Length: 164
Length: 362
Ligand SMILES: Cc1cc2nc3c(=O)[nH]c(=O)nc-3n(C[C@H](O)[C@H](O)[C@H](O)COP(=O)(O)OP(=O)(O)OC[C@H]3O[C@@H](n4cnc5c(N)ncnc54)[C@H](O)[C@@H]3O)c2cc1C
Ligand code: SF4
Ligand code: SF4
Image (cartoon, rainbow over all chains, first blue to last red; front, top):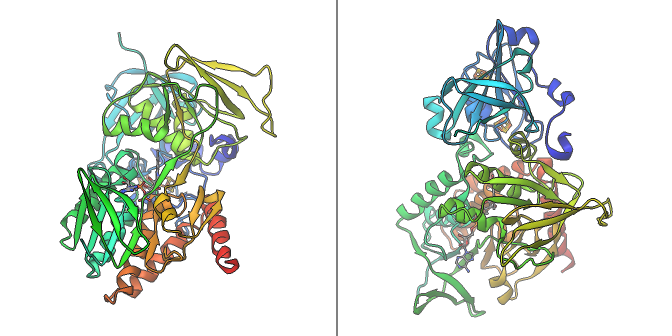
């Protein structure tokens, strides 16, 4: 429960999730930031002003129709609380900020983890990248995972399989 | 003897900003820190900070430390003494700094105390066994010196410090078995920080406490037990963790010994971390020439510490007749209030309210 241990439940997620239809169209950002943290870098990172906040302590709102899926906010968010999801044909994708080294290789098979760190599927690394402008400020690498499409709202982290 | 306009003790976010604000207004400043580097707690914070995007949010703590420290060292009005400890304060206004084999005497016109905080300890069997660390110590070893004190960790305390150190340990390749807390809900960690470690597989076990650590000369296992709503131990819920380090993150308390020596009025305000010196919104204590800013004035965080530092620095300079940008000072006070509007600052605010009320009854 969100106010017990900070892990959002389906009810919380409903408030910030994009529609199924939108997820099918092209990549879209969603936030899982439900507390009034005095924080606003997400708002200023967005090149198309899709993220808004009334005051510094408000909970952000992402206009999913405006969002172009550029993933700048994913890299900018200090709470690692913004993710990008997309569904394309038979594939699902989740893009997240990854603050660990060594970085995984493109094509590597990893365990997809849910919000409690339980393995929910096999995932493969489809892209490892950073956004030059934001990278300079936040030194954050992004990883795009390919997951089964029905898992895009579940997978929020991954674990590399132990290399021999 | 040194006779600067303003003496700043402590070079964390609060002290660096106090020194900068006073110096930029024209005052001569001496800044003393017992460490070899400026930055205070920030030098070991590798995570990204919250706050206003246009005031540096999103940057990592260590980068904020570098930014301010460069500014301080480049400021000709500030003389910085590093690796030197302030060890004494005398009521005639002289301060004593220990420098290897000699002492440096300083007689400032205004003093800003920004000494930060120290970590709290809790009681359990064998809590003096090697392997029991404060979270701050683990963080310093790991992030400042590149040393991991062990392989398997149990973290006690689910405030931001415990949860962030758990995440950083994971980044350093250690195994964190769990974070435990005696409370029935998170002990103050922001939800997003707590979510970050749980999705990486570190469980947060609430209503659980540590009863002892055991091992041959060093920690080899930690014993924990569940507690009920009244914090009574529940027999049958014992759980053993095979760990070589127990990391205590059970809170901070203001490091105000120097003020105690001076007879500054202090009050016990649990919401602010324990005994805190009385001060007004500019940081001024009951001694007109002395200010407190940052964690020593009540445990809070880096953004508020830096704002408090700026405000006190400007106020001290204005006391001494330097032309100070009044509009800027007002904006800083407003920014501090805006930041504290969040429910996350509720505790701090009610503590500050109680402290403000104390003056009336003084
Ligand atoms: C694990 C952890 C994570 C944190 N994460 C965040 C975060 O994400 N965001 C945030 O805003 N805040 C965070 N904080 C809190 C933040 O670091 C502190 O609130 C802030 O550093 C307080 O600033 P300060 O200047 O008051 O004290 P400090 O940074 O503690 O600096 C005090 C300085 O005073 C010096 N000093 C003390 N006594 C003496 C003496 N007698 N003589 C000379 N020098 C002395 C010390 O050496 C030190 O350099 C975190 C803290 C910890 C421990
Ligand atoms: S992904 Fe890009 S366009 Fe979409 S909300 Fe984030 S920053 Fe804005
Ligand atoms: S940047 Fe991240 S943590 Fe900060 S308000 Fe936006 S979503 Fe929340």
